Each structure stands twice: as C-alpha cells, then as structure tokens.
Amino acid sequence: MTGILITNDDDRAFVHTMIDRAAPGTLVEMRVDLASEKQRRKMWAMLGEIAKQKPHIDMNGNERFYAPEQWKLLCMHACGQEVDMMPSLDGSTFLPYEGRSSRMETSDMNELLAFIEAWGTQNGVVFKEVDNG
Image (cartoon, rainbow, N blue to C red; front, top):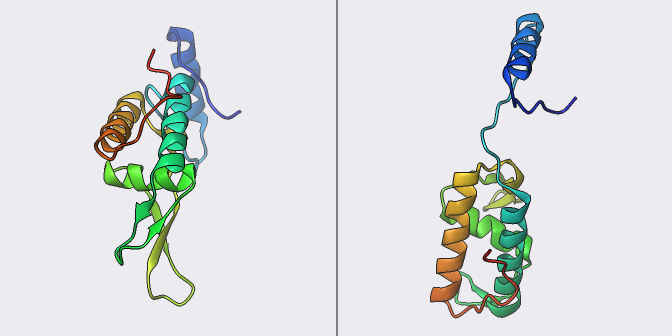
C-alpha cells in the first residue's frame, strides 16, 4: 500500500490503528493537498516553452539550451523548494540531481507556477501551449 487518502472518519480511524500497530523504525509520511495533475501539466507545458525559447546564460556568459527537467530544477531552486545537490566527480563543484515536484503541495506548486510564468514573461517567453483554465 502506498498511501491512504483520508476522506472520512473511518479512514482516519484506520490510519490511527495502523500507526498504533506500527513497529519502531516505521516511516510515516503525511502530505496535505498535493499538487493536481492539471497543475503538473501546466508546469511541464510552461517549462517546455521556456526550454524551446530561452537559452540559459551561465556564469561565464555562455548560452545553452536546457531540457524542461533542467529548467524545473532551476525554477524550483529559485522558489526556495528543496533541490538535492551532490558533488561532482572531481569534487570541484556541486550539481542538482533531483527536485521532486510530484511531492509538492498545491500552494507550493501555485507559487512555482507563478514564478515560472513571471520569469518567462520577463525574459520574453511566449506561453502558447499553457492551459490557464
């Protein structure tokens, strides 16, 4: 079982019973109001537009087009969302390797979407494939 959506008092009682019976060392994770599929589709559409239209300029002034997944990490980091980092093989720098937007709550996803839209608009990105409804 991967998760239980609490929709009524019986669900709540069942979860309570499971916690009471849980062995020491059991990990319990609770999430409130996760981002919707519609929000995730909008995020990927917006990141796709940025990836097609906007090169990223690095610290040396070099331009490079990034994939939507890379733009997601950049935007999540800019919004203060957790982005895991790891050292490069030679230890000279750090690089992001994961940022889990699928675990974001609705309010955090709304903040990320607003940031992506504002950043894109300020940087000349036209969001033509984005569902705003």
